[in-house]
Image 1 (cartoon, rainbow, N blue to C red):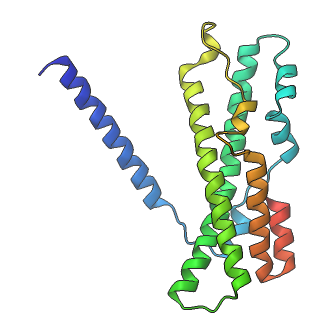
Image 2: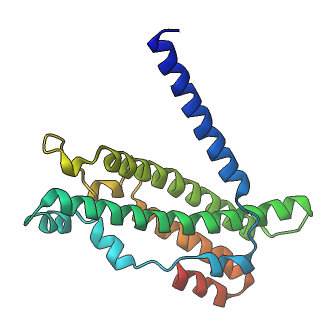
Image 3: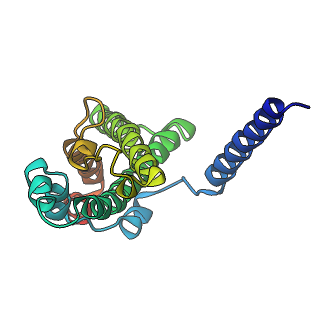
Length: 200
């Protein structure tokens, strides 16, 4: 067997193992969220800090002095942490919205049209955010793997650019998810809508 065939076999095995890992990880997750689960699982977000980190002017100022590559790597790691927290929160409310919809269908519940529209809006906004956030997280992973801070020949990454993968502004998209989740929570009472607003 030639070297090329061995390399292809190793690559196929690696892809297979990664696919198996992703499948098992997905199967291990509990996704049937009810409203009672949501508040306990949400992570508090420091929105001012997130906004500041993804601001281009702030980034230029932060990188103006000292070792800009090391500073940018630190900012990249912080961006990954913030993105994971935002992604986590959106995943929780998405799962809750999906559970509400599935229960409505399975148990033939009579939800009014306004409530159904709130569920659909949460679904749409959450999916938009989750796809865009995954793109941004993949970019942070790639930049981390290549360790650009050690190689002066590599162009500098931009944390500020991570805010808009494609045409989606992640911070605005997150706010829309938050508003959609609060609107759906209001079905259970306005105090729950306020709770979403405070927690997310």
